[in-house]
Image 1 (cartoon, each protein chain N blue to C red):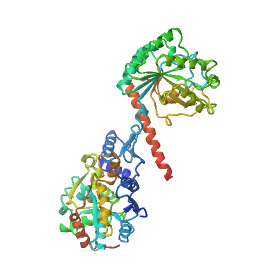
Image 2: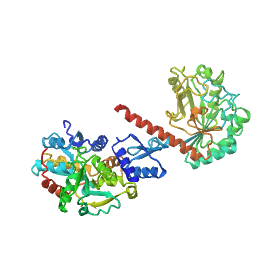
Image 3: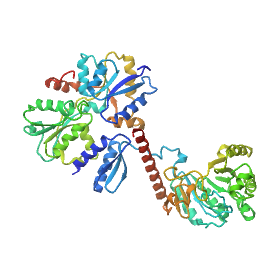
Image 4: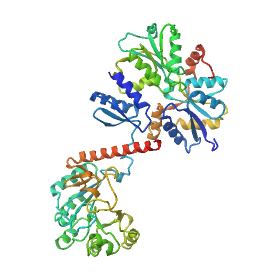
Length: 330
Length: 272
């Protein structure tokens, strides 16, 4: 008897304070449909449909994604771990890369498909990372393919540009490509402590190689828990290298992968950035081997994976807002 | 107000009155007529505060407006109203298929009425029945005197009266059109067990009431700004939707005549 359903619904929801959630019991799909239509017509929102109830949010929900700056919205940027093997074994690597790591390479054809679907889904920027992407001998083909559609940044330690790899680097397009080079300290001591002896000098050499070849360069530093006041020194060093604000990135290490200390991250505490690896779609590139951050094992179709991630983020944020608004009243 | 803001009174009939008035206050911030608000637990105390000059403007029900008008010897002014207040109605709702049609068919039947201070659910239904020649002795009244002091704003007695019809402890329920519109918002078929037996003519409901002591050059900028709230602007819409309107309008005082007549007939006092 839907009249009683409507009386119960109006009774339960209309008197509820705006911003609260009412779990309203429903038995059938038809009842769910009625509640949805009523919410649409009366300025309320369906939060989720459970087995025996529908959660109604009193009032209109502002889309948490719309509230984000465009460049922070999930799906603006796509991260791709092309591979996981690396010439270095950094002690805080968030994905435990090393020369011995299983490469887990995304095949070239699949990579092309992924870029194509990402473009169709509205992705605006591509970030390629690993492992060390330049370990892949076909990286140049990937970058040529990617930059034809999207501004592309490739993360590198800039240490493997020798011989054939240097020639391939020289042949890469300059337009639409940024090389983001890791450099954790203005001096070798801190950098080499985490990344290996001699790595600082070769990274500096790599920075100059990239700049001299006419590439757009960004330098990125990961500060460990032992970084002290390295950030101020780093910024001064970046000034000396002539880097503009948008050519420098400084972030704290996260407790992920090999790092046994650092920032704690989780799905509920991070704005997602779609990250695809050979093993699936992850919530964020900083946690691309963390099982808790795996969104789906299959990135195809990309639009569905992105949609699932956006929906999950919305739910976290809305639930968070509900809790936040309830807190002062407790 | 010490800062020169207008002080508007409203009755806290639900927790959502706070976000409504915070939203309206925010809307007026930076305008030519900034305002603050104060909430009362009932309309009696609010009218008293207006008459004593403790507030500048009162957001009154139709019953509170008429009492304000009478206590001020007709000097009170209605400044603005909701579009929905200009076309408010009382509906008689019965069981579908019961054969009831029009007020005359209610003679001898069980009529559920709402709170005694509700214009739409009690005072006007009794008046409309009497106008049709049906006194309260000609029907069996089923009274839901809930939330007295709120003048029917909570809708509690409307819902109670409708449940009585579904539970077969009443044949018809007198409710405000806003309650019925809310119940049928997902489509008329969702309330197919019940049917509209009778619908009153439109009458006026709430308004912003003020006394002559509120100078025109203070009131007018406030009204002008109020009328500019726009349903198509999301921040405005949140407030308008919660308060149950799409547009603020100027009042139509003739729309209060039926309630004035009803209160006279029923001997409802000008004071409490």
